[in-house]
Length: 244
Image 1 (cartoon, rainbow, N blue to C red):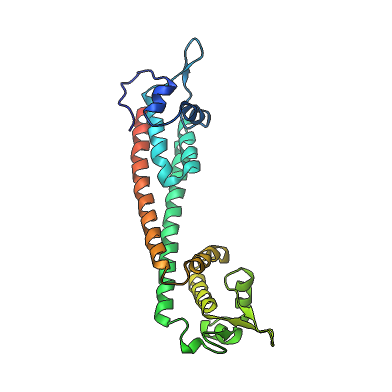
Image 2: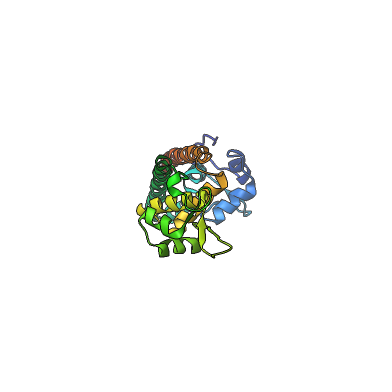
């Protein structure tokens, strides 16, 4: 918790640091980074801070959880340089990224539900061996060209094995799942480089069912981030009013 300060009260770096659970070096670093306004100096060259600096520090620390350290730093630097519109632009971009992350999560959930309804690994997908299929039948099921599946393979979205006798690509149940998930996300407008990390997460989870916990955690993190942005906005508004 920050200290309650009277306007014009002078603080040493240690006072400001202790009031926010920081080291004095961290306070100096924040000033040098432009997060805090430049400090006044005593005749002996020592830094002195005021309630304005305390407000800037509170605003920065409140912005970090929602926007990240780098963006929060850029926001505070813009404000302290008098470029408030630039600060608002950075905030808008951060909110847009949060919205994009929410849309991505929704797209992943929709794709997973589609996979569950369609029954990946059912008899309809079996061509050679349990749950295995070749590139032609899989491409036909998805309504895409075989060349598209080969492109997805190069991008790391699917990893079919090769039949030792024929050299043909063989897609097992996990490959079919990944291909169908990729297809749903591509239909949603996502790029291959955006899809690859999501496919990797499904693989790491061991399938669709274990991913439910990850999706719940993802929801929670986005909600926490959204609330943190509100808290950061309130502290920044207080600081802007104090700056005048």
